[in-house]
Structure formats: C-alpha cells, structure tokens
Length: 82
Figure 1 (cartoon, one colour):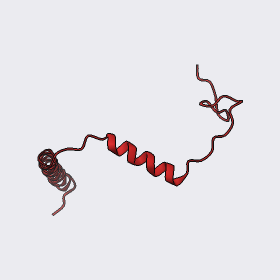
Figure 2 (cartoon, rainbow, N blue to C red):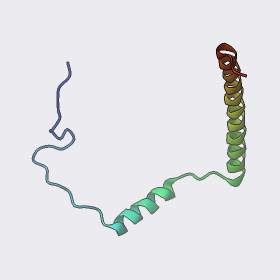
Figure 3 (cartoon, rainbow, N blue to C red):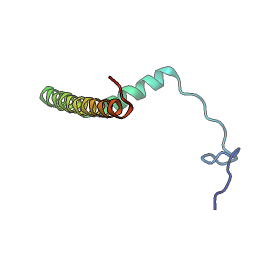
Figure 4 (tube, helix red, strand yellow):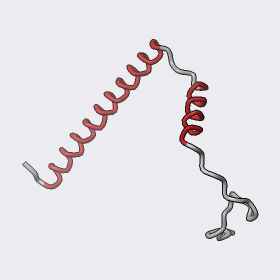
C-alpha cells in the first residue's frame, strides 16, 4: 500500500533548521580534495581504453547501419518503392 508523502520532507526531521549555503571557496576546496582521491589511469591505460571504446563504437555503427539498410530494403519492397 503506497503512502502519499507529498508536501512532507522525508529526509529532514521537522525540528531541524535550514543549513547555511557553502561558500564558493569551501566548495572549490572540497572539489580539489575529492579529485585527489581519484585513481587516475596511466597513459598506457588511457590509450588502450580509448582504442577499445573506438572499436566498440565502430562495431555498433556497422550493426546499426546494416540494420537500417536491411529495414529500408524491406520497407521499400513491401510498399513498392523504387
């Protein structure tokens, strides 16, 4: 059974005060801190990942183009196109 909670704040208790906005400087420092935690790929990994993505995209383009040509031919045969 669904409960209608529209209009209620589900994530905040009713007595909690509104928090202050984060300053742009603090926000930027938090971004830099999070980016330092990221494990960045090496140049070799980046090149291999890029090649894998490009090959996959080319294969998908081939599949979609082939299906498009097949469906186009089928529609033209069914509806008598030239």
